[in-house]
Image (cartoon, rainbow, N blue to C red):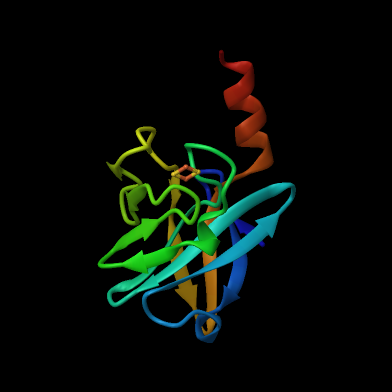
Length: 121
Ligand code: FES
């Protein structure tokens, strides 16, 4: 785990070979849950839980750059997190991803940055 100067902490989520193309993997870290996707043009990450109700998107289906929720079949654009079909209407939070060697890392706000953001409200 390493922090950039912009307070992004890069966390190893999985190995490149852990996810087949057009698939998704669950990654849990420090009490939060994420979904890591592999598309033809690279890796992406989002919050793991659907914004509609309690379903994990890693149990869903990746089709044409979209993730379909396993519970009510709402769909999100994987790259932008934009909701694409009812019943989902709230955007899915996405995270930066980079590949370092054979590892897939997701960029999370460093703990200090989260605390500062909470205090700013
Ligand atoms: S829980 Fe995902 S669409 Fe309802």
